[in-house]
Length: 266
Ligand SMILES: Nc1ncnc2c1ncn2[C@@H]1O[C@H](COP(=O)(O)OP(=O)(O)OP(=O)(O)O)[C@@H](O)[C@H]1O
Image (tube, rainbow, N blue to C red; front, side, top):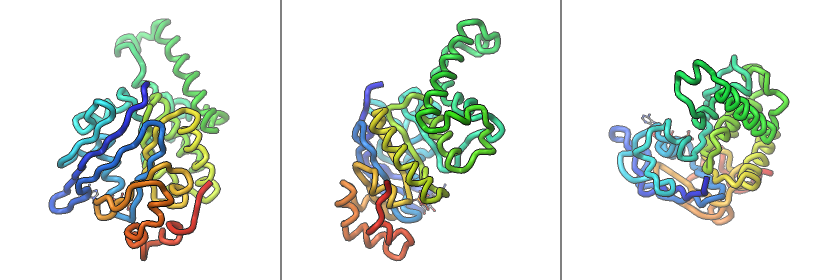
């Protein structure tokens, strides 16, 4: 799929009297790793949820190439080349890693309900092809040795990778990652940072990363947009954003202040 730009323009989202997003604009360039950060309640998840079709924008647009995403159903995202991994993974704990990742392949499956039920030879051949590709993606993410293991018994870091594998299984040109490092220890976070880099560099996939961990973001992002109280307060390369007085002020008094100014991941 051809790489496309993701253009967020004057995105506004209100919950009653609360303005969660106030004319937010930024662009994710094809093949880049773009981070969206900000203190608690800044509007990061709201923005992620509007882009991925879970929330309806009050105003503004989100364009992916020529497609206007604010009018698309969430189920169409995969067909447009957008893969999403969520903060609280929606994986089935009793199913195997492979079966969970195969869920991502269904968006690419041809054949109607009847054909799938009867499973003629061409459907079985297609399933084998999809399973082989799903296994390849798991190998890439370092979970190829647990394909037949139920997700529920895996360590947390591996579960997150299964969710990313499921998102990559739709063969996206844009990957949306919502706080992938949440709940991870330092080692898992460093390993995740290197995996996210590989997804950009080796697969050429654009990534929009919503993340709390400033160290992770500053170490790997090409471009960073900072939200505070639903507004963009900075947008640029990590080094510039980190030195921005308004960004430092926004993080003052939060636990991330120290990492905002000193830590680098990977
Ligand atoms: N479904 C909702 N209904 C009402 N208010 C909401 C809803 N979702 C978010 N908000 C409010 O919108 C604002 C932005 O919240 P959001 O979760 O997007 O911030 P965030 O930057 O992701 O925060 P955190 O880092 O704590 O996850 C907050 O004031 C929050 O309380």
